[in-house]
Length: 218
Image 1 (cartoon, rainbow, N blue to C red):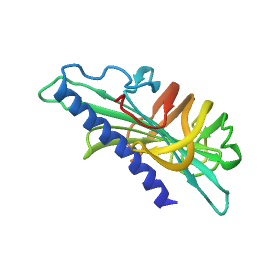
Image 2: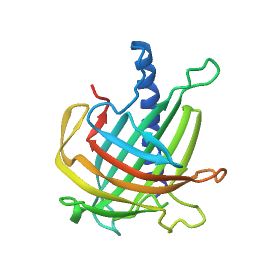
Image 3: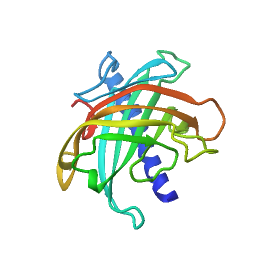
Image 4: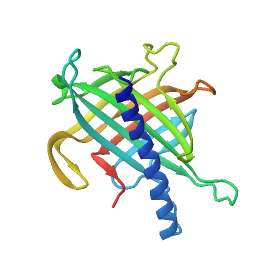
């Protein structure tokens, strides 16, 4: 299971890197930094009571199988934002949240419902999440959806309220595989620092309505 954990952990890091790179290009090309969501996708929430709105969002679906739990779809929903410091001494801050849902194959055609959020990275019918903040990839603070001392204890829920199914594309090219082309829902969860040092963050009022792939708004 460690291999799968680090695989999805790395995907969350890619989202942080994409956010930093996109924002850097945006600053070089125009004077207006991204103040809201790009494209038609949205992901919003509150972190410790403060509003948080993504400007870059992602939705990916992967087919998976497990001898003990059967076939399922591993779905990732993500959003990123940049906090611009406008300072010569402080770097801009990128923040990202990625939520992973293991949807049983029997529910693929109708995934609507509630999925408890836990610390374990793989359990069919459940979800888990990562929240990260970074000024660059060498200085990243990572939070995960649960307390290492109580890994089985749910720390929130994710509810899928709407969906569309279609052929997945990779960089605009058809993949020949079905997945979710649009997903919407709500969520709330507590996240804890991965290294065990620091305070937990409380994420509330989460909402997402995201199209498949990376939505840069191009």
